[in-house]
Image (tube, rainbow, N blue to C red; front, side, top):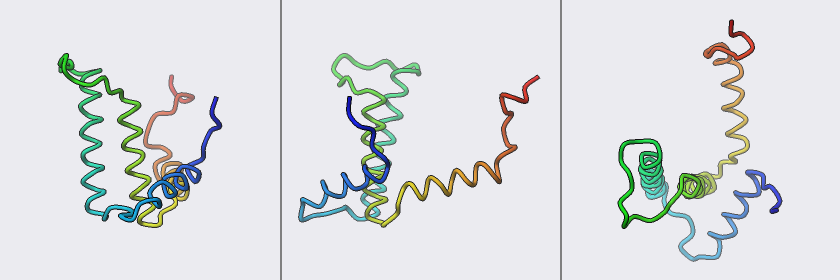
Amino acid sequence: MKEEKTMHDMQEEVDQYIGQFKEGYFSPLTMLARMTEEIGELAREVNHHYGEKPKKSSEDDSTIEEELGDLLFVLICFANEQNIKLEHAHNRVMHKFTTRDKDRWTRKDREE
């Protein structure tokens, strides 16, 4: 079994991979377009699994996991190009959810 990676590890791994190439990271607009494309592919896969649109026999056997992986890669590229540490971004959003939004949803331990 492979060792678990932190988000920092993943950002470093992607940066080392991209750093091999003269082209480097795409521009922010190109990465946003790529992210949008990957979200569309994820939406298509979710629709095949849970919606009313089954796959054609000629279509690849992509999985939701693969599409999430593709989206994560592009997200990491975008964050790296912008010099954003995703662990920091995650901590900020979790603080927001646990403070400002703490009473927004019904907690399981409060159900009657």
